[in-house]
Amino acid sequence: MARWRKALALPRSERALLIEASLRLLQAWAMLRLYPFRKVVATLQHASAPDGLPAADIGRVRWAVETAARHLPLSLTCLPQAFAASWMLQDLGGKPALHYGVAKYADGFEAHAWVELDGQPVVGHRQARAFTLLATFSEGRTESGEADPIGDRERKAP
Image 1 (cartoon, rainbow, N blue to C red):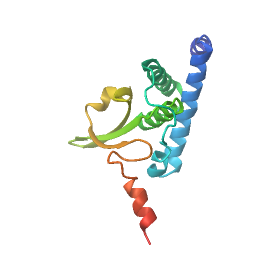
Image 2 (tube, one colour):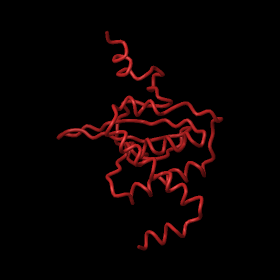
Image 3 (cartoon, rainbow, N blue to C red):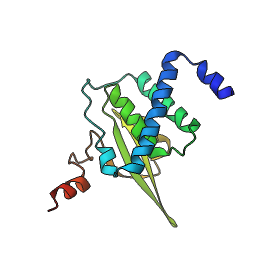
Image 4 (tube, helix red, strand yellow):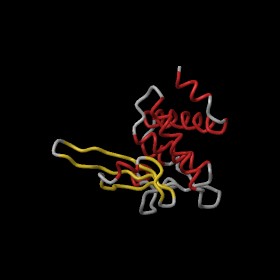
């Protein structure tokens, strides 16, 4: 009950941002379970607004995504958080970069996703140093600027 009181005490703009983050997290969670990864990556579209968001907007998106992820009754790991933050930043006119990396251990490996905007960390950056970067997705494309190679192979197959 205390959480609800605390949420209701937030200014209207922060409540709205928290609701948006919650909806985007749920959207990412569902899409990652229902669609191939390449289709979800393709949702990272080109932003039509100019580059450069104020640091305050980046901080607000970080706060909203991390707070909503902690309080929703699902396991919202780094990947849904990364997509939610990317979509929210795109809505504000930013061009986020979603990074995907792995860390190898003696008994296996672990994957991690994090987001940056104009070189500034947004979400997932605290753990990112422990991971080797595999790919960066921005505007539905990989780091090399080529379209998703898995999607291309599928389209070119006879």
